[in-house]
Image (cartoon, rainbow, N blue to C red; front, top):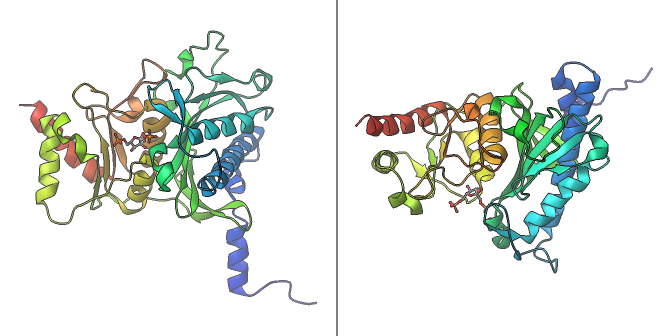
Length: 345
Ligand code: AFP
């Protein structure tokens, strides 16, 4: 009988290539129940949307109508980019008639989008920021998509989405897609954080890092220092401290996903504090801060507003904003020590 096995290197490559995203989600769920299949299908649909967005971004400079703004202003009061609109639509189309998700809530839409035909069986709400860092698109820099999965609770006939006004602990999964020098998908369903890299030749996200642990400390601090004089004195004191300390580097890309991805792998801290006139900062709790806090906490890091753990914050409205300090535990604690010293007088 001939040996059906390949050599060791070939077998290793095969094992790696068959560890696709949906297979991984299924194995993480621990059983082959209907719920596990649903979650794996749901993650697969998010990945499909991510691949379509990645494809559109890769050709944006050539397409006639891909770059720039639409002329509309979104619910956040920000100019809508054409890619924001495209990516938002991709998510809606990805979940129509999927039977998976009853409701989609996005940074770009004032109210959640219902998919009534899914609701009898689609028990989830998907919250997402279709293009995080869309200001980077026109200059071909990294951007991302952030997502959060919550269990649908009851029927929301008013469209007020009151059941979503709960803490980040209600998330059953979260993650992001990073459109960088490669396209990556990073997710958690409460059992560690795992990263996948898109293999364009297969059209599949293949496992590239499993059970990622964020370093306790890193040398990067990531903040828009252009706002220095808008912050409280405690935050300014922290920045003065890192300026004087040897070994710190500032890195700020304009896309939260890209900065968080660096910090997840290499450690450090990302900060978007409140400022004069904007005490809650810029970032949206349900679409940005809570999903990333879920991921970073799963990886062993920490996320806080400065006074409260991000995952404990209960929003008072769908598009609520929150200050965000997130990353390696020791680095977040150092920031907190400066804020607390100031607060205590
Ligand atoms: P856009 O999606 O409007 O470009 O905003 C990106 C973002 O929400 C986040 O990804 C960045 O970290 C942050 O805002 C950048 O904001 P500043 O330009 O105010 O630093």
